[in-house]
Length: 334
Image 1 (cartoon, one colour):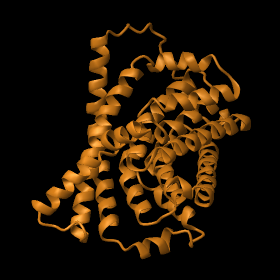
Image 2 (cartoon, rainbow, N blue to C red; image 1 turned 90 degrees about the vertical axis):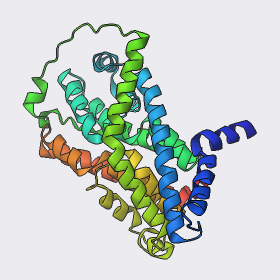
Image 3 (cartoon, helix red, strand yellow; image 1 turned 45 degrees about the vertical axis):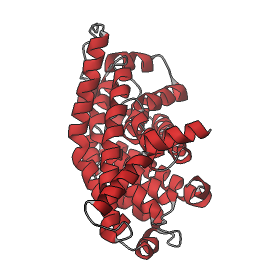
Image 4 (cartoon, one colour; image 1 turned 45 degrees about the horizontal axis):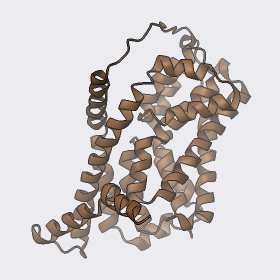
């Protein structure tokens, strides 16, 4: 356990990096860490470097594994299951696709056009931006493994239950007809060599980092601002446990935003540091990643309003239940 704790601190939390950045801020920049400016600068540099280093390494490994599961093969795997097992597998496969909510929609279209039940494709659509292996490791690096595992469990549960409920409601008629007409060729995929897989993983790192870096910097910047400049009393008054609407507020503030989970983590870290309940923070993260306004607009192009409204209602309801439950029972996770 001592070795695991040391590896966790050294490799994931990078406590040595935090100490190094603190030394630079004090000695090079001349800013005391006890002051607002010093605390904010340390937070910004440390979180930015740590997130990009971990993100690059994790995406490389995950993309290498993902090279064994291209979309055609994934559709074939999902097509061999039915019922809640198909929803569960769809949600699990979503965890190995490091996509934001908008990037997941083309795969959603592909799965639906291939004849998969829409409940299964919605399980994938919910879990893909919400839970991926990289976000789990990053959550553990910023908080701890208890929170990371709890986030994965509730995220997968929401994806499985949400997709299963959509299946039970039989809402296929509310998918736009052109989606079912997009029959994709079932071509034999060339076998990738190890060199091909390494190139695929490298390209994935480059593409994803290029896509998410603005959101990471914005998220870290907001987190640094909250960490150093916004009084804890104000944040507690708005999002603290004494406000019974804190989870609702966090959820509906998160929906209009568009960011990957990597951009929301620094904000979540700063909010927890200021005393915001873990349930409120999880609700904010889930709303940003699973229900961003741009993704809802894109989804409206392929499904009709009743199905979109059902999807939104199910996910929001699930997020609210998760948020309030963790605020009541999840204090020991922090």
